[in-house]
Image (cartoon, rainbow over all chains, first blue to last red):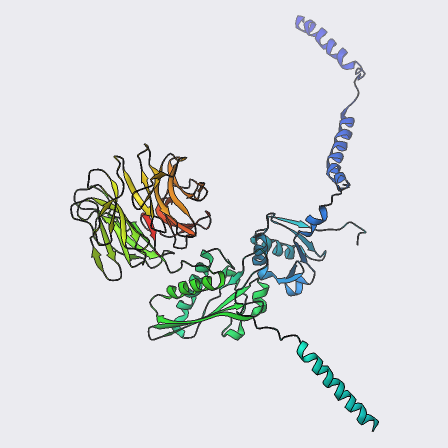
Length: 153
Length: 450
């Protein structure tokens, strides 16, 4: 009996606590906010590099610019390459077998091992890589690929 | 009748015109006094040469045809006067079997200014080699020669062609037929007798590119510091075959050995005078090493230097009037110059801590190459006698010693440890165009023949 008496207030207390109404939450629920912010963060992280592409650069005007441009070595890769395996180095048709040696000859007198490649848009990656291989074999360190802006002729 | 008169009038007018024009007619274009045979390249670039394989006209000449073409390519590239198109790019160029089949269009597309066409025929122990040099732009032959001789050494034909092409096209004396002599321990025999545990060193000679090695001495002792006589038919060297250093002269094509010095005296480091009649050498016959001059047969001995310090490694000036040598009279070995008459001594190197083994260049360059201590090893440097400036040829790759000039003065042979063992290398006098000559054993003190 005293055992029961002793346990009665315990049982009553538990009952009282269970019946109590849950207290009102005083903090803001930040979970949806954090979700939205993280999604926004990811969107901006992905978008940031894309935004930079549109940056416009107004090139400085210099009287020497034409001079340097004329010294550039252009390699033309027309779509006819697919049939005859010939590229054009400074307007001279050269078959792919000879390209490395001819470029090596030209590079012996040049300090900047740089050529500019004017490739046709129809040329596929495999053909481009073949030409890159020969250019690298000929001692070219950098290849600039010439493109044009939309609408430019 | 009217037409007849018109014809007469026409004839008259034509005759008058001819008469009036004849004295004033422009002279016919003169023939060039000399046929233009020199092939030039694009402005500012050396002419580009292609040397495809020679055509073998007989079935057993294929090896010789390939060897001649490859050696000719190497020889022409050695002087660095021409741009030699690498032979592995010729694969897609059509092969010509006769001079009129040479595919000039393909060679032009490959960038060649000149192309060599040659044939090789082997017949009963003789080789007949025909060679032509074509100007690719004009499609004209500017060089045409035929060589006939023994088939034992096809490389010699290529060396000869190279020298003649260099002479004709660049007015340059090539060195393709010259030889190197050096001291080597490549046969790995041990000296017997008093000196413990040392390899013998024998004198060897080879072509300038390291081929055709011949052994000169067989004494199984130390044989050192070979030098060529100016006629390239004799080698003088230092040998310990008597137990002490002494001079010997080997007449290499006659198999004769000469001992010009008196027996019992210690002599070393001989050097022929440019006319070949005298020899300057180091001797300690009077107590300490001094320079002496004698005639080639040993007569006319004359003492050149007189100083308690060591005077050694003499070299003649191209005119034979002066001698450069090493002396440590200032404390450290330095280069000095003295007249061949023993007068006008002056010190040359002042900026080096240690300078040794001078070699005087042939004309037209007036300079002295020597080995200078730079850090742990030595490097080859060149002292320009006109300006007094010193320039460095090698830069601390191993130890580089014993420079020797090629007969045209454009190259240096030297001994270097850059590949581990001591080997002979050649290099341009501008410090470019390094080539390894020897690959076997240790090789020291090269000398370059005329």
